[in-house]
Image 1 (cartoon, rainbow, N blue to C red):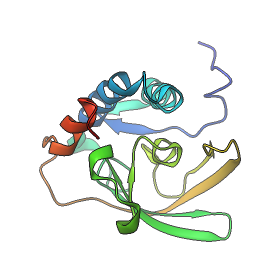
Image 2: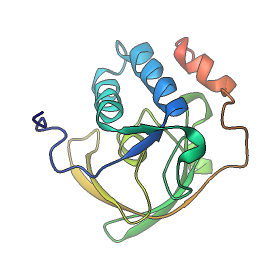
Image 3: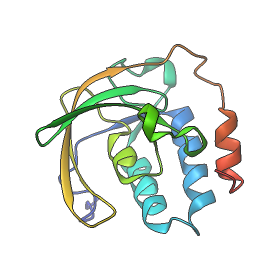
Image 4: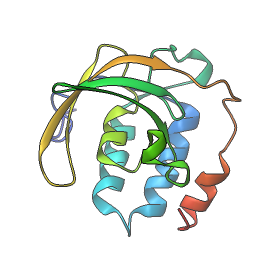
Length: 151
C-alpha cells in the first residue's frame, strides 16, 4: 500500500471504535457544507488504527479530551468537542476545525503539521492529555444537532 501525499510523514494515530464511527458519520453529514474539513477528517479516520475505547491509553487525544499543546512559542489548553459544544471563550474547540482534526488520535509527545483555514502551515506538539470523567458510549446531544445541520 502506498501512502498518499496527504498522509505521508504524519504521525501514527489511534482512535476509539466509538469515536471513529461518530466522526465518520459527522464527516459525511457535513461534507456539503465543509468539504475540506470533512475530507481531512475522513482521511485521518482512514489512516488511524482503530481500537476498543477501553484499550486506548489515557495519553491519547479523543473526543472530550482536554489537551495541552505547544504551537510555535504559544502553549494552549483546549477541550476537543463536537460542533454544537464548541465555545472558543471556554477553550472548547470543534473537531470540525483544522486544529481539531489535527489533534484527534495524537498522544503525548507527538507532533503534527496542519493547515489553517487561511492556508498557513503550523505545527503542534501534544504536551499533556486529560480524559473526561464520563460514560465512553454516551452520544452527546450536541452531536445529533450538528449531524442534523443545526450545529
